[in-house]
Amino acid sequence: MTIIDPEIAKEPAEFKAPPTEFGEYNFPSRDHISLYGEDQLLHILWRGNIFIVCAGCFRVPRAMKWADFVAGVLTPWASADPDFDVSRVANWKKDDTAFEPKDDDTIEGLGIEHKGVISFELP
Amino acid sequence: MAKKASMRERYAQMTRGLEWEPTYVSQKEVFPHTDFEGIKIHDWDAWEDPFRLTVEAYHKYQSEKDKRLYAVIDSFAQGSGHLQVTDARYFNAVRMFLQGVTPLEYQAYRNFGYLARHLNGAGARIACLYQCIDELRHNQTQTHAVSQFNKYYDHLQDANVMHDRVWYLSVPKSFFDDGVSAGPFEFMLAISFSFEYFLTNLLFVPFMSGASFNGDLSTMTFGFSAQSDESRHMTLGLEVIKFILEQDEDNVPIIQDWVDKWFWRGYRLLTIVALMQDYFLPRKGMSWKESFELYLEQQMLEGLFPDLEYYGIRPPRHVDQAIVEKEYLSHQAHWIFYQFAFAGAYNTTVPFEDEQEWFSKQYPETWDKYYAPAYAKAKEMQNEGKRFFNAGLPMLCQVCQIPMGFTEVGDPGTQAIRFSHYEGERYNTCSDGCKWIFDREPWKYRQAWLPVHQIYQGNCGGATVPEVLEWYGINTSENGEYFDTSDAKNWAQWHEPANVS
Image 1 (cartoon, rainbow over the protein chains, first blue to last red):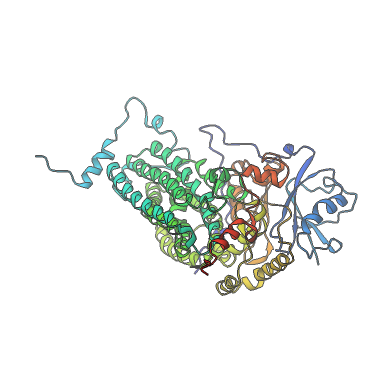
Image 2: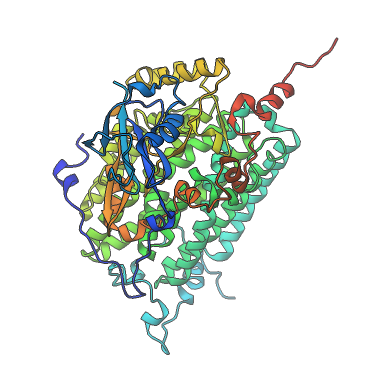
């Protein structure tokens, strides 16, 4: 049976202003980057490997060098899966966009946003 | 001598008959909260009371039920009934219920108390008053039904503290926080309709029949005792939506929006039930998939929604995705719980062989291909003395707060990530449903208390996992791998054959 017309499902939400009768309903983010000092949050996803069930979340210095990030953050996390092999890591993406980080790049220099997602594969 | 009033007359006199029209102040001053959401009610007296109870009759019925319930709880406890359950792994189901659901009863009690004061109509207020007392009673009776296990099994202490602090419990907590911080009509739609009417069978029936099937008479009897209350709540839920829809045509699109939002919120919350039902019940009854087909697809989509179509309400947005996910939801949930068990007030282990055969039969499209290989690898690691745990903290959905282990719909091998930007900041969501909910009210969800982000801000007891677990109130020698816990060791010892030589 057809549950729902696919065209209706795609219909965009109507945005409404927050109610103002009792004041403005608007609260600050609990995760704004300013709450993390010189650091930021970022997520790493091992694409196509559901053994590690979801992306990991990490707090890292924005000035951290890519090489240090791979050695000190990514590798210990991904090594929970015994099939991980850092020498085979390839096909980096920032969300859906491919990118090629170099060892000396920093997290900030690579344009990885606060709470952004970077991902890799082991082809 | 005056004739004794009939039940119906007594109800009319003792509930609506006590209502009066304010003359010193306006209706708006007495009931300031019932128009800002845009819902228009023209005639509060059109509210039909499904149960027509007086306060006196209500208390008489409830106290009778309590007497019977406590008699069973006492006799079960005195007979060391806990030794009769199928396996100590079963208590993970009880933990989920006590930590995740029982505190929600308390939240519901608080907000129905608010509604019992703030709705304009006497009929609606009295219905909410009874539900308010019911919810408090459920919180208490659930606590009592389960408390006898506390001295034998771990993680049954401090459920309220855990509910406020522990990562996976932020899933049910944030669901209700979302409801109680909405207006009165949205709360009623969220809780009375979506939760109590639309989804409650998927919550209560699996837990209670699971308890019965696994020998836990105490929890099962609580379920029976609550059942007549739940059916009253379900009837109220249906009355709520029909009443609002009949009052004004302008209410229809607002209600549709809430049906869409609260279906997906509730469905994501039930992920915990799917997990419990398929994995934490050693003796299996109905699978999550079968329950979903019976209670959601048949009873709700084929039974309820054709009726609501008359009012211009269509089935909830994204329900088509939920239907596809029935093939793997419980497996994705348990795989999350399996690898993060080092940080929870529960324990997990690789499903036993007979369970795996059952999964293979119940979920032929997904089990053998995706989950059997994962557990086989985990088992191999465990045999080598390296029990598999995730080595980090999970990415969380900004709306449902579940670790982002969900996948693209129909493709269990590809993790799904959605995100939105609001006022320059990025927010991640797990699915089209949660993203749609975020985008409707980004100003609301950006204040979400996401456990992982709070840990990284240093707000959860410290910078290391042991410090956080201490702040959670979790005994770290009792979580993680089931076979390393004293639950497993005690259970084996308690069930050793008596030495009669």
